[in-house]
Image (cartoon, rainbow, N blue to C red; front, side, top):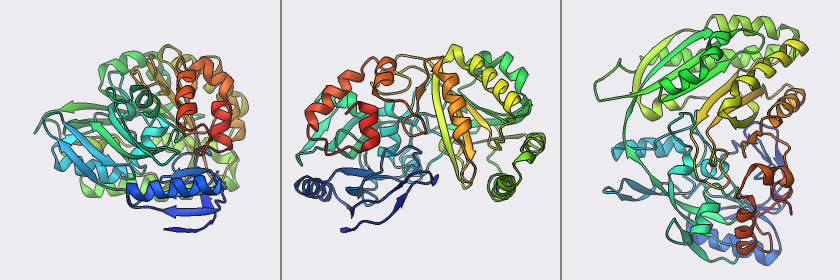
Length: 437
């Protein structure tokens, strides 16, 4: 179904677009029709997921294609533990569907609102030094190309397209189906506690090696972090799930409703940020529980923010954090959101931030009503000295020249794009900046 364009905004509110046409589809055939119509009218086409990217990847003045109707598990290969999933399926629906099949994704990020195709296209990663991001679990993709044809790709079929499309930025075609390599459903034993930032930094690499998943949240202007350590346990092992009242208190009332109110106040009184951060860091409650993996990985994020995240070589993470701490101390910049630190092992996905490199990820956030520009500029200058690779869905300024130096297969990706979309149907100004159009 097509309609005249309307204003589109992303979740963080920092990107706005005015597409000429908004088209909703519920089938692969509908995607084919939308692509052919856009090409006939000479309009560019971008696919809208749930808007959780902070970059203008989706923004278009042409056709905005909504694939919300493409949902669900389409097929299961139980012997190989593989599932075929419609591209518009959000992770918060996919995860329980996999659980019902006795399966799970080996790793997830900490938000589950994204569609599976959007999470793959932008390189959503999660944490764990012996694991990889979601794109590494992709074993097949089906795309509608610029000429309206449908292409299935995998390591055996059109392998160069497959390597390019696993983190494809939506610039090769419209993904309509994703095949995922799953693992047996598993449980995680979660330990969360407030710790000294300085002490954690001193043993950060040993900590990352000692646990399956480590996620650290450091409150600027303090020496306190919320440290999360998650480890796999067998059936019946570890403590039970969080009681419903505790989950509601921690994740709804404190982490969302109260935190929203605090950030609104700091928008008007930014000078109070240091005191509030110290208070927030000191009231962190320790938690220990075990639950299904996806229930531990993913948490509710209702307080809106904008974010910049870079992957740096694992050996660089402590220097980066020390430089960032020095900048906060020097400037007193009011940033109420914590800095997040995670880890991922190397993979072989061409445009993955972890391509052939063990990474640490450092992410800085700012409340959506506060100006993030000074924070993001300072952060980007710091990580630039450590060969930082930007998360494709989070704020950064890098273009093709610098990205080519950071990604050994960058020109191989561009060659695939030149072949599949020579007329640049699937582009916009931001994609052109990234890829050197």
